[in-house]
Image: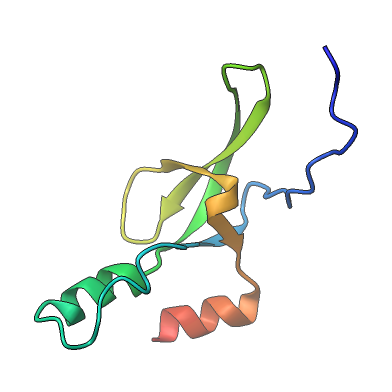
Length: 101
């Protein structure tokens, strides 16, 4: 079995990091004329903010390590598991702007 020559360059999150959800879907799927535009736009644009409470490494069917983060979202009491590539680390300035709006 041949090993990959390239190591994935995924930015590591650590426990205590403030993160925001990355959403890469549906932002182009509805026009402003649609009767439910505001409801759908709110769903698409609403990105949760939370804190990483644990890093979990799981293996896929081929044995590759996949990094997940247990995130405690601001509006929830229990943490949820999310793939690290769907999360983005917040800088202190960005966190202040997001919580103010």
